[in-house]
Every structure is written in structure tokens, then in C-alpha cells.
Image (tube, rainbow, N blue to C red; front, side, top):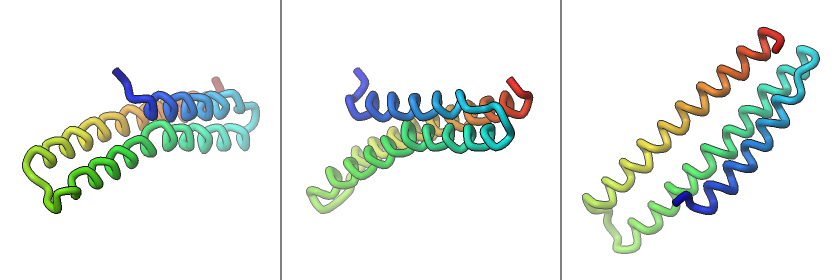
Amino acid sequence: MIPDDKIMYGLIGTAVSATGAGMSVTELQAIISIIVTIAGFIISVLVPLIIKFVKWYKKSKEDGKIDKEEMEELEQIVSQGSKDIKDGIESIKEASDKKSEGE
């Protein structure tokens, strides 16, 4: 099951990206479109990742030390976050290529 905050940020980020993709008549609008697409990426991928990290940090520091299990949990967060970032960057590159081709 996907956490509610990830769904919310994903929907907001997708809406912002769709808005950016819809604005590409001139070069200026293509540049604005790419900027808005990047903003959508930040909202949908980086903000939830930062929130996960902050929650993990607060939870792991409750007992005053970070143990092996908490480090494994952090490793999973970083691994999933890096995968999400890689996917997001690829989608931004694809959008940028489409804008430069005039699609």
C-alpha cells in the first residue's frame, strides 16, 4: 500500500508536470515548460524523500543512538529514493528532448 503523503505529492507533481507539458508553443514556453516539469519532479519525488528522511531521523534518535536495524531502514530509503530520482531525471530528459524536437 502506498502512503497517503506519497499519493498526494505524486498527484500534485503530476499536475504541475502536465501543466508544463501543455505549454510549449514558442521557445520561451518550452523553457518554462521544462522548468515547470522540474518543479513537478521536485514536488513528487524529492519532497517525499526528504520527509521520509526527517521522519526516519526523528524516530531513530528517540533512543539516543542509531542501531543496525535503523541503518538498514535508511539504506532502503536511500535506495528507493535514488531509484525514484533516476526515473524522474529520465522523464525530464524525455520531456526536454520532445520539446527540442518540437513535438
